[in-house]
Amino acid sequence: MRIEIAHYYDNIKTPGELVAVFLVIPAEFRNQLIEKYGKKFEELIPDATTLFKILDKVNAEGRKMLCENITLDNVLKNAEEVRALTMRLFSGSDKIMILGKLNLSRLITNAKELSEILEWLDEKGKEYLLKHVDLKKLIRNVNDFCQVARHLGGVEEIKLIKSNKKILKQGITGEETLIMTLNALSLSGDLFLVDLPFIKKLQISKHRCANYLPKK
Image (tube, rainbow, N blue to C red; front, side, top):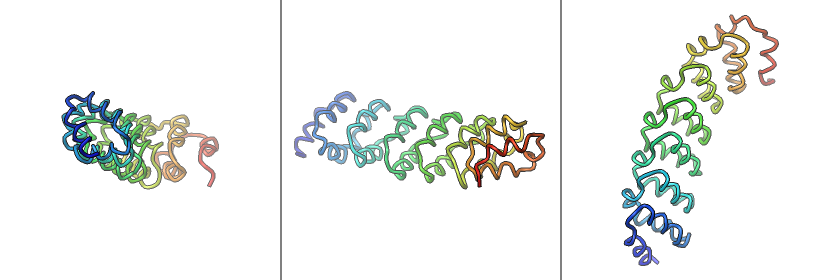
């Protein structure tokens, strides 16, 4: 079968022909094609559309191998394509691997894009991503903060609050903005936030806001 695989590869000249091969070659041999020729696919995978068509035809192992063998930073052009790729990978370690091959600061330009990628990562993946983007540029107001915070918890959530105290102090001006922020946080984040001095000074209905805190 390896001779047949070589025959398939020798006849591939365009991205469309590469995709077509993965449509016709038996599923059990698709990983062999990637294993043998993956590094040569670089020039045949010019964009995310081509990459995703191939990834959708192979299993988890094949997806990992293909992502390892090509320069993803040349293929992916924006945060939506990063999100679409993280959706197609199954293990947390594979997702961290692809994030490590990307210039994340170039690809992720706002809090909404960051939050949409965080949604598809496990805790280690979230920690890795947050370390490799410029949060000061992405989080500019309370709405941005809430978009990111709703996908976090534990240590990362508390770190996000601590590093954005100035934005929170400027943006949380009363009941409405406080409740919006509480709704984006977990219990530990809620309790940490309401204990901050500037929150305690707000003239708000403590009873009403308490209703938005999860029960201990």
